[in-house]
Length: 622
Image 1: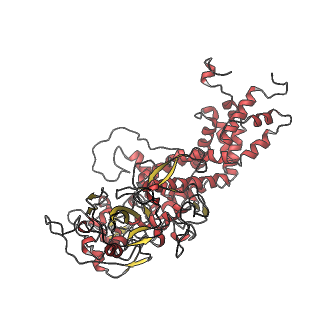
Image 2: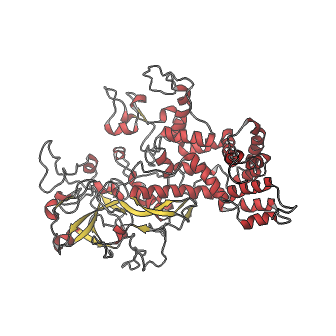
Image 3: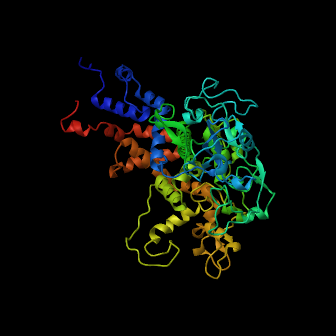
């Protein structure tokens, strides 16, 4: 039937369709169109109502996830040896295969297996090399030896109540409050025959220990001479004894430090192995859990599932943390500046496990030469993680009001620091995403130069005069990780790391101090040369400075307006942008008032009334 005289005009239908797509994330339903056509329909009230809905929040979150490109692909591994349980399949006393979990480089008192799998090749018939497939012909291991070297554990990935004295709530029927998003791979749930459910797992005894603090250990075994054959039974040379370990033998060391498994025989994976992640093989990045293959509507509505490696597991939840953080900023209509300055975040079980265990395990190796054995000043204080959040709680998200004094919005999240691994990459990402600027050279010529200071080197200075001071804010956040280098251990100018007669620094110094800007009197911390003040202020300093710049508000307005208009901004939009910026700033940098003004603007109505190219060309529905 033809529309009634009171029916909305075609332009109104198109406007309503655009509003529905932008604020609800979908086309309007028949019922909603009927509501539009009904007498007395209040479009203003409809807009107000949907500016508080999940579609609106998802829309803004996607804008900034895309701007920052915070989803991490398959490139890059994160499988710390200290928190990764690999496994090998051996033969038990009855000749049946069984799995034994172990850590790479785990210190053990018995020299033949120190730093290796807890059964030698002579004992198991298997050669378990680093990050490689297990080779050899298995032979049965006696019950006595099996019990001597391993212990049985009911781990967190199998038991909901793994902290109990005798856990009983096994994954599946015994799981009292099943979490449909938590899906261990079948390889972790069944014995090697593929049909017998795994009730408990065999773990090398050192890995099963539960202490929080261990003692530094050194074996005093001399290093293997160059070209000498391997000691009988070993798959590789004996563990090298560290000078630091010898000098500090018997001193306490945190079992969460990266040094713990290679400097102590007392540190394991904790109760229920909660500080480690299990893998299905002995490979470099073993598989562990299934995760959604696609998340068009978020984790609550996934499409498909696929097995993921331990690296994939970590990276997936890092991205989800960023999404939850942004959704809070937009959903609660917080001051948009908090996207860089907010100290709060949201975590679930995998992230709680990461911040308690895996994040600290990124530190410390050469740091010990500067007296730093563990992450002393983390960006996310492990104590901020509630102890009741278990590693398998993937769907319940907990609000963390304060990560610690060094936290700075999205800047100090692992997904940002992993995506942008260098100081300059981190600075350039912020410059582009939040100031809408890019680093473009004024001249393409690069004349030869030995000048190490890129801020003055010909051909480089036009970009690096701005980039280097911005990158200096990340001086104390290690490249490729999130470890913070405290001033008490790593002063900006350090006489210990001065240049020698050959113009070089010591091996440990080279990683942290830049020879190009050091002298015979002192070494200079890498990245600090451009602005020692920015280096000391850190990520929180760059967040404060960026959000005070007038370009910050202008950039936010431009990005959101361009996205909602669905086209590049033009000169004719200048008046609109000025009005929107004034509104945005005067309303306390709240996105809801900005988006409301955009969707009510004539420019938005005109953009929504554009006919598709196919229709203009004479094809498609009319």
